[in-house]
Image (cartoon, rainbow, N blue to C red; front, side, top):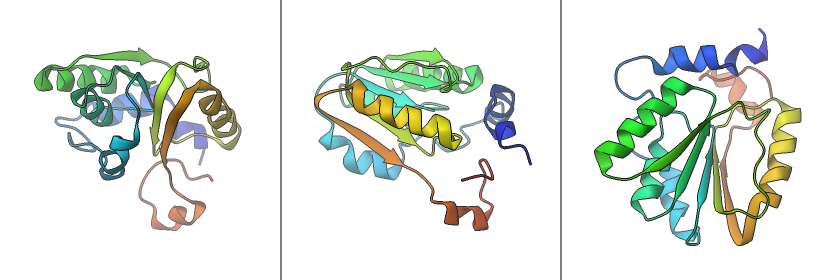
Length: 157
């Protein structure tokens, strides 16, 4: 199987084209649990999909930018933000080509961002540089052991 297949915008646009939200409208449980540790300031959500985490963080008062390669997912994110009476900024971009602004973010969030190893290394390096002093990176990711469960996403570590 081609690992890029699960990374491209066509795959994610198709996945998010269903009615409702694929992963629900409530924030990821881990993000909700650790959100109080994010200092006041702007937050960047990477591979944000349909926006559940971005919208949640906006309801806490953060100025949130959600980045994803799926314009379908980000359209749903904007509608979800409208439903909750908050604003988020959305950026349609492949993380392989996205530049994280240096020193710009109080928090950077990545939950189950499916990235090839080389892209993942670069992004995580850029995340460290992108944080303001005292900023936090919230990461939830699978280990290679998850591949045995066939629960979705790319089939590479």
